[in-house]
Amino acid sequence: MNAYDEYMKGIVKPMREELTSNGFTELTTGEEVESFMNELNDTAFFVINSVCGCAAGLARPSAVQAVIESEKKPANIMTVFAGQDKEATSTLREYLVDFPPSSPSMAVFKGKEVVGFIPREQIEGSTPEAIKARIQSIFEQM
Image 1 (cartoon, rainbow, N blue to C red):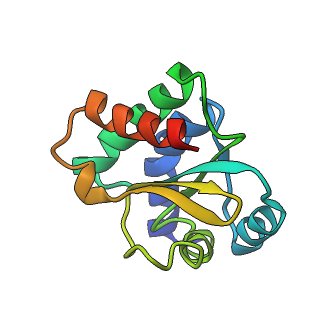
Image 2 (image 1 turned 30 degrees about the horizontal axis):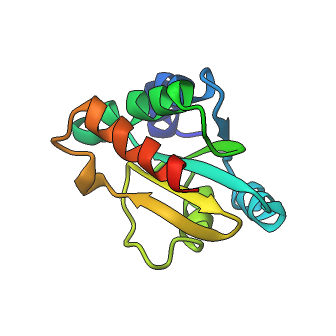
């Protein structure tokens, strides 16, 4: 691993752990994403994680709180990391063809159908409470 990759690995570790320590399963390869999506028959909430300070610092805690506080939530709580796990993110985006690439962002699937998507533009400038409410609204519609 080169010096830059090693540096970035250290920088993003707490950003990954903010989700994984709260019950999110992280997929880091395209094969993991493909395998998961091929077997997905119920519901899944994906956070496409990012280092973007302007939005990711709002996205992660809002997603965590939405999952913790929601009675109705997807069966699978997942994450991929854009810019870090590029193959995993690219593979997930193959299932998000109706939405332009955006990170951070969030998607809720029912089977392979996207039933809700929150792009970066709806995260930036929002309050954590508003983001959490958007997520929970999608959960309620599943």
